[in-house]
Image 1 (cartoon, helix red, strand yellow):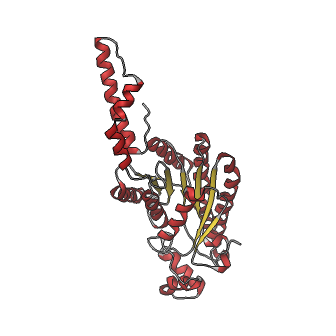
Image 2: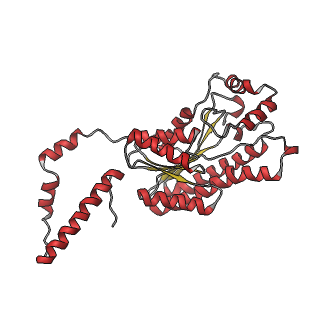
Image 3: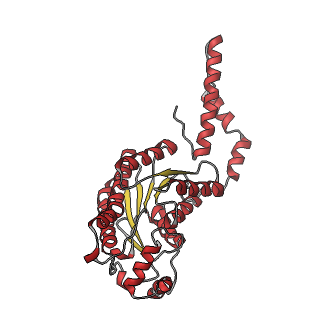
Amino acid sequence: MFTAGRDRRTTGIVNDIYRHTIDVIGGASAFGEYVSLSARDAFDVEYWPLELYKLTLAPPEKELARRIALVTGGASGIGRAVARRLAAEGAHVVVADLDEVGARKTADEIIAAVGAGRALGVGMDVTREDSVSAGLGETVLAYGGLDLLVSNAGIAHSCPVERLSLADWERSFAVNARGHFLVAREAMRILTAQGLGGALVFVATKNVMSPGKDFAAYSAAKAAEAQLAKVLALEGAPHGIRSNIVNPDAVFHDSKLWSEDVRRERAAAQGIPVTELEEFYRKRNLLGVRILPEDVAEAVLFLASDRSAKTTGCTITVDGGVKDAFPR
């Protein structure tokens, strides 16, 4: 049995009611023929005056109400902030991460904040086709489809090219390029089959526009991600599917990408003590500000929502103003 509703909770209510209806029909059929109410009587039962008045008191739906979003890399950092922000605006959110425990924790936080059924945590290895297919399949089974993809999962590796191993180069491309391809491909298959449009948002990096010294594996792979996003803008447009990019820079808070090794390597590349790294990046941007996951989430929300309904192939920077990384 398939049931529909404005959200997971009301869909469950419809499901329960119709299961009882099936029992009633079965019981009535045991004694004779089941006869349903006329359409007019059914309308009067459902929409009697007090019920109609109650509906006028309901708060307006939020911006992303009735939307289903999948966020990769959602266990921490930018992905976690994005998942929470989309849910706060009414979306049902599937939080995907290689760290399944962390993904479920983020989902539990969302449920505690906005209500039961509004989030689901799943384990996903974005480098594996079977894992990506399973995660998107679980999304469709849980919520009935997909409207928004935020492709965010990523890793960083810092090393001069002359010392960069093939294994580390390929590992970066596996996550930062192949991972975005596999997730986006599966999402596109779902969105085109649905025929309802949709939005893809790719979390890339300032390094797409302005690569950093000793950051070849990361910068090159993320550039591939950005090109993929632009091609998807071309291919998705006839289906009403938008594809856009957010380029953040130096988002340290709650980030697994900025491991101790990466911090140490980036500090060495800049010729500064590791204790001064965050301050170095803050001073580098024009506004002199620290970039937080929540700042990136606001840009993602804009690109995922109808506020950007006529925008595709766009890159929004969230970096405090790094002049070398200006898109134009």
